Every structure is written in structure tokens, then in C-alpha cells.
Length: 108
Image (cartoon, rainbow, N blue to C red; front, side, top):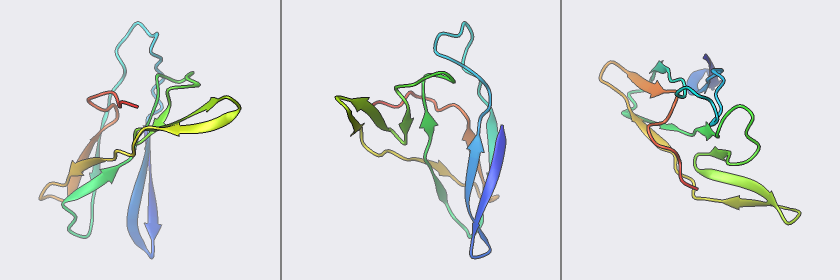
């Protein structure tokens, strides 16, 4: 697991969190999950999460970004699904807990 920060105008604007645990839907073990605690500034009460999801490290279809997917069909790249970000609550301590594996599989 690695986390990167993005600053805009000298202020923390975004995190990029990457889960490097390899897993495929054909694996004979449960998908690895980790929790990351993110510090949030500016008195925010919630933060938006856009996830890149797929059926595993070797997936070449069924990949989605915030429930949007793109598949190559009939010689064209087609988009399907509806943009669905997740929202995390920020605690009074200014921290938000992000689970690396979503509690439900996105539907597209």
C-alpha cells in the first residue's frame, strides 16, 4: 500500500492510494484488505472517493473508475455505467478511514 498527496496552491487537495496486494477473482483466498487513515484539513466533514476496481491484477475487462467502465466493442471504445463516487465521513479528529477493498462490488 502506498499513498501520495497532491497539493494545489500549497494546500493538501487529494490523496492517491494504491493497493499493491495482488489478487485475482480466480484466487483461492479472500481479497486482501487494508485500512488507511487519511488526515483531512480545512474542516471538511466528508471526502469523495473515486475507486479504480477490477476483478484482479490480470483483468482486461470489467475494470471501472467510480462505477464507470469502458469496453472495446465493435471497433469502438464504449462507456457504460453511471459515475458513483463514494463519500467518507471525516471524524471530529480530522481523519477519514479508507478501506482498500470496497464493502460491495460496483455494479455496471
